Length: 143
Image (cartoon, rainbow, N blue to C red; front, side):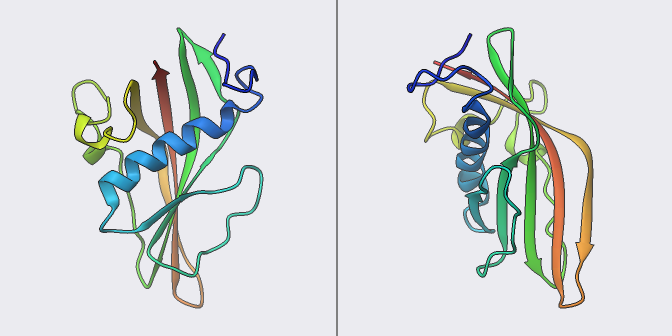
């Protein structure tokens, strides 16, 4: 079973690992598009003051499958006036689903796979804030 440096078993603190890894990839891929940050687990995700913005958080518990951490994440975007809809496709090799090497520079020894698991849900508030909720599946092997 995978253990964190603090000795916690998968499922205890590993729910925080996948959002951090995905946020690093998104910072590399969307640096010029939006502010990217990890949202606190089990807390409401409030619209940030700086927009456009992307927030990443676990949607459910992480599990271990064939030696890989696997989980579903929420990727929430905020932008004024019109939705910012994202897809994992620009970030991955289309054949393998693995994140492109040039986006993994900050994560040596890590392999990530991404895919969308549900349609994106766009919402436009009365004050003009466009929010889109994306549900992605992420799996990671850590060296």
